[in-house]
Amino acid sequence: EAEVAQSPRYKITEKSQAVAFWCDPISGHATLYWYRQILGQGPELLVQFQDESVVDDSQLPKDRFSAERLKGVDSTLKIQPAELGDSAMYLCASSTPGTSGSYEQYFGPGTRLTVT
Amino acid sequence: QKEVEQNSGPLSVPEGAIASLNCTYSDRGSQSFFWYRQYSGKSPELIMSIYSNGDKEDGRFTAQLNKASQYVSLLIRDSQPSDSATYLCAVKPPGAGSYQLTFGKGTKLSVIP
Image (cartoon, rainbow over all chains, first blue to last red; front, side, top):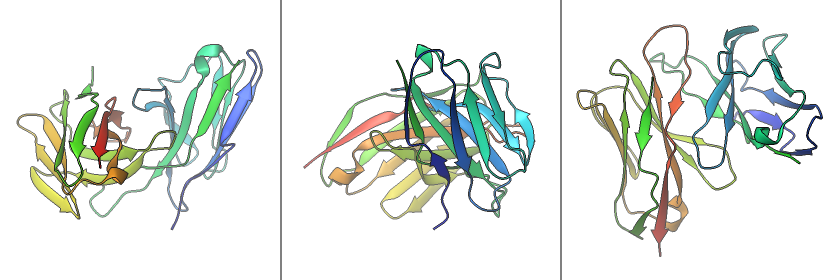
């Protein structure tokens, strides 16, 4: 069964360090999303890509976060410098139009980030 | 502001009972609605999607949508301890070009053996 791949699964970093997360969407899925989920909350969208283009990054803290999807396939999300408040689960999801244009989103396993 | 509201729970039901999870949304023009299950420490897993008013059944799960009342629910029949998880309601607001979902905070379900 096709799945979204993410790495690393866990990351512990010190405040002010740089950290990067990688995502490989389900093959053929043109739309890729990065979400952040704080414990006890629902996922919140950080950035959405359609192929290699950013569709929505209005919630991405651009002073410290960056995201790219250079060839329209896999994607990297970077944080530099990391802050204590960045501790969260970072989720990648992908979607493609269904038969009804549904765009159901499928999530990867996530990266649990702890900033110390 | 687009909002999706869920009772955070915990909702406790005995094994074999029907669990009823509810969700309301603020954006009247929303067209697509999804239920995700999330086990502790894991990522969300899509379990149901619904786009039209009425009921949609898949195994022990039934999603119900009432767009006039801006209400979507998930029923789990014959609840099992393995159903114990947080259930996230997600809504795609209207508008072409952006497929992002707005998630509720989730309802924690506990099925008691």
